[in-house]
Length: 92
Image (cartoon, rainbow, N blue to C red; front, side, top):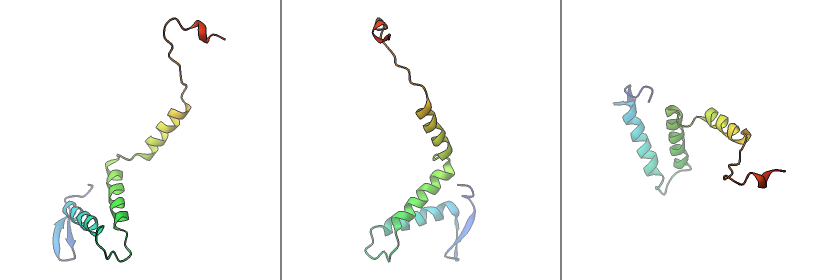
């Protein structure tokens, strides 16, 4: 996403754009999840890393903003909305 048009060498032989290379590596990891001989490699973890990296670069997963909003929701004052005419019932 940052340098998606940059040309990289795939397998040190084939020049390919970075965006296309990411899609190829994603497809390889996705298709490798169903292979019987994984060789001790967790391909689901690689897919998760790709998804988290994408969300991080898109700023869709803003942890600081999420934490601020969560703190605000926990500390805010909650008011009870009462229908008209019920004010006498809640007076101490």
